[in-house]
Every structure is written in C-alpha cells, then in structure tokens.
Length: 502
Ligand code: AHR
Image (cartoon, rainbow, N blue to C red; front, side):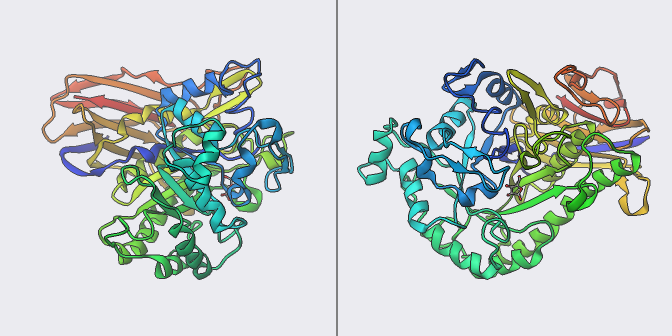
C-alpha cells in the first residue's frame, strides 16, 4: 500500500497557467491543415481557423501559444506574412520538408487564432537571419497604438488597434539552427536585440525570453547569464530578461535512431519514462546556475519545447515530424507536468511540442477529421492546476521499478495544488506497465465530502486512430472509498488519475 500524504495547508508556490502552454511552428501540418485551412475551405472554420480544433483547445484550457518556431523563427521574415494574401511571398521552408510556404498564415492570423482560443501570445523573433530593425519593427507593428510607420501599416492592413504580445522570444536555439553561435556571441546579440523590443504600453509589458540551453548544456546557461544577465534596474523590471528557455526532447533510442511511436516493449517503455524523469535533473541543475545570478527567482525558466520525439509514421514526409501518440505519451506528459508543478518556483512556462500533427501533439487531423490524443486528455485532466497553489505532498512506500538498472523510475508520481475555489487537485500516475497500486490518500485537515475524479487507463500501446477515435479517453473514476477522512483506491497499471476534492 502506498500512502499519499497531502498537507493542503502548506502552500509551496504559484503554478503559472503558462506551464500548460503549447507550441505551433510552420512545420509539416501543424499550422496549415492542423489549425488554419483558410476561409474558403469546406472544413468548418471561422476566419480560416478550424472550428473543431479551436473548440477542443478551448475545452482543454490552452493558456498560451508560441509561434512561428522553432527553427523556422530564425528564418521567418514577418513582412512576408502581412497584407493581401495574393501578394504574399512564397518561399521554401528549408528546415521542414522543403515545401512551399505561402505565408497565408502570418501575424494577423496568429493574433486572430489566439483571440479565438482566448490564450496569451508568445511570439518568437528572428536573431539568426534577421536584423535588429526587423525585430524592432515587428514589435512596433503589433503593439504600438499611435502614429508611426509600422502602426500605420497595420491599420492599412485592416487592424486599427494594437494587439498584446505577452512573451517575446529573442531568437530560438541560437546554439544550433538559430545561427550556431557561441554563448558569449549570442548573449551579446541578445543584449542588443532585446534593447529594441520596446515597451509601447506600460500597462501591457512584453516579457522577454532569452534563448537558453539544449538539454544538459550547462556551459551555455553559464555563458549566456554571465554575459547578459542584468540585475534589476528601475528602467527594466527584471533587467534584460524575464525568462530563459530550456529545450528537452525524449528520444527513447537517442537522437539518431529515436524509436517507433507505437511499437515498443517493456524495456523501451521504462527507458522512455526514465528519460522523461530526467527533466527534473535538468531543471535543478540549470536552476542552480540561475540561482547564482537570480537568487530571488525573478527570471522564469521557460521550457518552451518539450515532449516525445519519435521516428515519423511510416510513409509520411520525414520533414513533417508526424507521429502517433500512445499511453506512453500520456505518462510522459503526466510525469513532466507533475515535475513542472513541483518546480513552479522557477519554471514559469512550458510549451509542449507541438500542438497539432507534429511530435507529441494533443490533436491529430486528417482532412476534415480530428482526433484527441492521450496527451490531450492528460492536459484536460490537469487543467485545474493552472493558476492554483502547489501544496506539499509525499508518497510513503513508493518503490522504484524498471527492467534495466540504468532506467529505473518511481512506481507512482504525483503533484497536488489548491485552487481559488478551495479544491484540492491531485494528479497521480502509475508508471508500471503491469502492476496495479493500492493507494491511501490522507490530508492534514481536510475531510473530503465533495470528490470528483477521472482516469485515463489502457494498455501501454493504446492510441486513437481515425477509425477508432475513442480507444483512449478520459473517463469518470468512481472506484474509490472514503474511510476515516482518507481516500482509498487502486491506481491501475499504466494510468493517469486526477482528483478534485473539497
Ligand atoms: O520542434 C521541432 C524543432 O525542434 C524546433 O523547430 C527546434 O527549435 C527544435 O530543435
């Protein structure tokens, strides 16, 4: 029997809603087909945005969306994507499949999408191949509410009022596809470029995100912070940056081979989950470097690309990164989100890669059809953590499990929050491929009277297809007992459970 102790009185920090963020790049069928089909499409749409996808994302409570890349961002020239669509430049998407990018989805379309979704905006600027002027003018075009060349151009293109940029990324992966820079070189560019990301509206500040490390590149984190960390100053809320990004993908068989999304054995199951758990070490070690510069944790760690990256589905364009999504992805999502919650003092945003039809997506589409993946259901089940307060929790009697010595994982993992309505939200994962877990959940003071719960449970390879779209779905969970103020239940092998308790 595992004992889950919850001290709902001991609040540990605020869980920013943006931890449940998403990423959409001009890559494969993410933007085109997945989100945007154009006004003339037979697929039901509002101003070109797919109705089915927008509704599903709102139901999941999407808090923030990052766009236009990724690697694409450092080759994107925003002026190609404004004005009458028939005049927009066609270009080659060199990073992703060499296909024609017709720029029919640009700045106006992105803000329209975010308005429909009701989410915050995270725009990623171009440092790798763009100029300071280009970046500066983009911010002026989007956010300036006055008379200026860029604001006038926006009005001429049909949008009188400015939009709000909540977050602005100054480059992406500038250690790699964003220019192969050294940390010092990028950091100096960052100092310069971010200067011209002007704050046109003091009431709506643009939070600036500095390009951080890939995986365990502590050298990058140290080198960048050493050069461009700026202590708080009256003129800049947090100096030069509000956040530092971190990218981490789970490739079960390593970067070269990656591994199939649906065909794996127990050994690879545990290996994948152990690699998902590794993000905690990355957060702690990069966080320790950040602590040296920013002990008060004013700068957020922004994990703006994370998730499973497998071999593409057979027969699909290798440059489109289209992959299926099984219960294994659900567990990777559950593990990662619990870790982000538990590190909410430092992790202020995270964006799973990517939202539709690319890598670990929450939605897959095929023509007019749409399916929700197991990962979607996890985000839906975890949504009450958004903007709630993390509280203390601990599992006694939690063993480690796994096939290989090197890839052991905890049997169970959890995170717990208390929200504004006073509900205690518990999300718990059973990481075992085949062993159920008896759990007894107890509280410091709470005597549960109002309990609702849901579960995602199937065998580890289970996934949704266009022929069987509801093979894996969130279901009500009622198989628990309340005894002496404790909630007792069995967490089936390979499952995600969420409770909402008062
Ligand atoms: O998400 C796919 C790619 O992965 C992104 O474009 C890039 O930033 C990362 O390497």
